[in-house]
Length: 453
Image (cartoon, rainbow, N blue to C red; front, side):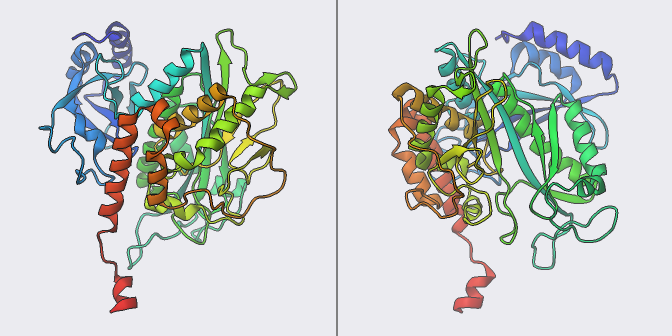
């Protein structure tokens, strides 16, 4: 079976190998439901045949737990005989990595380009939403903003994370938001992250120090290719984690790594253009009613979408209210960072919405897919979001399911998400995250003995 993009891939491979003759191995990567990569490492002489014919890996790999283990109660990989799925290399994703003991090539793989793509591959779920917009002759324009922490490479005696030390002063880092000094003090690791991004063709934007000690944010530029934007966000997570190791640090995208400090958010900016390149949310210096309808859809489906934006037990620790800037209410507003859905100041009619709800632990493919699904639901049904919120919102909304069990139950009952994302996927996703929650809770911590023995 020849890949429909095989000729393009062959040209890409020949150009890459000519520029990097020292490379003798390559890695194939695909993303699972948890947002983690799985794959294999191969000798470089296999690359061209994979470009022509694809390769096989178990379909069940998409459904493994965060620890890479099978989950109880899931049919795939257990009761189905664990069959292979056919994967295809993703054009434009071949690149170089240099954090190992020698340079290697790296390329993404997906079932999307096949005749029978896996309905539970996150990349395929996002592709369905992109196609739904394309059916209206629309194309989303998106950008991700991702926060992360750098910690000491060693944990303390209790196995807990330790605040990273400033590489130049040797002192424990302190939280100073938007501090150029902090960026300068951590510039060696940050510069290596940026260099790795360049090698992987990831365009980065602003760099900022954030509210927590050792916390930073590196933004990505707006992207007309939604799938590539999500690819880059997943690759960026891997880059940060691997580069941090080389500097004796541990990087984390966990939503709330320390209760006393700010959490890690995954903010997403979305606008939509038509087939002539016009922003469908713009009426010059005012937003088009479609933008308000899109926000109406986001608000209407927000309770059901929470399990995608907050997919883990720890995710819900981030929604504490107060000054944490993690939205805890069904709200929207103009230039208001405490609401769930913000309309940033638009220049030259560049109207967009910012989704500020997801944590950095969310799967970028699924977080964006459910955001686009919600916006499309609002536009199709002309949903009114009500009036904007003009003041700070700190209180938790009782209508939001801010725990894992309630969030999954709400997702499972959502007709809107079943219609746009597929009922089979919604059912599988809810069973997957519920099974992992049960597995996570099936553990006795020392605190139980300290409290109840």
